[in-house]
Image (cartoon, rainbow, N blue to C red):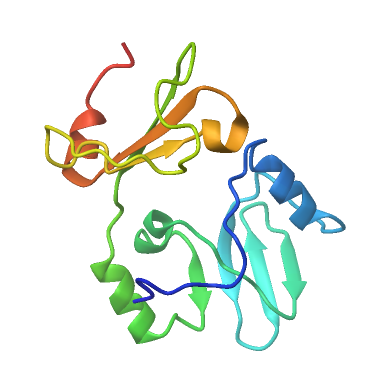
Length: 159
């Protein structure tokens, strides 16, 4: 829907791990870990009910439950989610995207390009190749593959 749309600002690659981003966003927030949500009641204000019987109350809730949890109806919504959202969930499915990180003794590719273009011999293999040297100065590339090829790769052993 937003294909080809540009946004202001520049892209950034998080190189030190996403925990730094999360820590910054969570500053001054009361975060409860290992808490199973059983119900979200948003009929007036918001009450989030947990499996241990406790409740969290607030004016708003940002719900980022995984699609699998939503489809399994593991969390009760009061009132029930709108029909359009339920219908959309029925038609959504989980995809597979594999990321492979490769580190080499030295860079043997162009150092000053962010994305490396390559037409693979096997259709669907290596849909994107990110030059991590461009971002980190380390001789690494990150290769992506998705869809049917990624599902097949999921069957491979780590070896």
